[in-house]
Length: 518
Image (cartoon, rainbow, N blue to C red; front, side, top):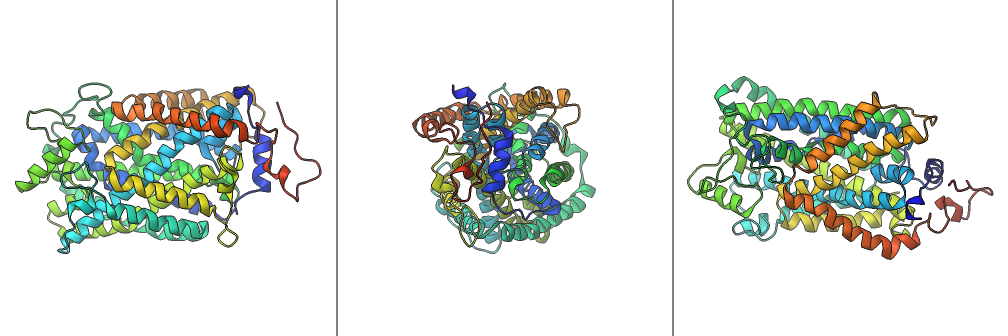
């Protein structure tokens, strides 16, 4: 039976101990990894997207998305402390609900991590191009935007930064974490400066009307309104779960993973609310309308054309800016600070790309180790101690997406996979509480029968608030994943072949391997 293919938690833990990645990360590094993943395109770039969808009401959007992430983070923390191995939601689902659903979660996580890395690469490109323009160097649209924009063809800077970060990640985890710590400091400093400058300049009139598109715009599926913006802004928070994918490379994971998860989320939530208030109060955040007065979806061809039309007339509202925070400071009369924010984003956003690629490659690593993907992908470089093969393949795919698609579309596509994974994590926590109540839980989710259902309801609510095309990506992508699973993983997985632990095949395997559990 397909649904009977459950890999016991004991076997997962034993496998990781035998064939694992090197444990080098502590609580401070984990928190920085989380902050590095969370503070990025969501606040530096998607502020413009959120303003177009919800206007000043995006303040509520940040709160809603943050609350959903908070309850999901508590569920993640319990599972991550119980199962301190790589794989995130994929591993947790494998242990609770079986191989088929685990594969679907792992395949959905490609939408989260790989597509997220592409989106952040596009966001970085916007700041990079803006910095060059302020220096008098204007790159043609054909080299800085995909074909969705007037005159666009390929986003060359976005493609190149994705490839550079891929090379860095192949060198080694410890080296990447050190670079990330420096970049996180740069980003946090930039946001502090932004908050200090803009909050005293707040103009209450810029908050009116507060919710020009209401809660749902024309209705659910439009992707507009405060809920539609929350579904997009959710992208700005989801980096926290990249911390759990690093569990297998963490010292004392039972203690340090929950610290990294919850600490990073709390820090970033405060920053987001203060920064968004500063942006709205300083320059306003009202959405633009089409020539017929209709609402425009950010990232659409119509929206790009309308922004270009306004730019030709000498107007550039916040919703059209590709470097939102730098734009706010320049409009507020601080061009040099705006350029400084642009430089900070230019330096800091690559750390988000790094963490997203990190999470994706580690999930592929575990899926390969489980036999659901070719085992050659799990090969670890003898010098760098990283899964270099899958890192290289993933990086090339990320670069290709970044080259041709807009940041808003990529963010919404990413969120569809993320929300599904979070839904499965919350459900897994509840099932384990009932089926294995006596198992050790170094971190226990408080008020589990309230928190986990709230996470389930919240993820479903945000999913149905996405644009219809983004919602459809998940079932279509899932269908493709099922075809791949039944062509390969169904026959090749270790569980299907009766191998509970990978190390049972190793030459140095113990004489009495852990027996399978049914």
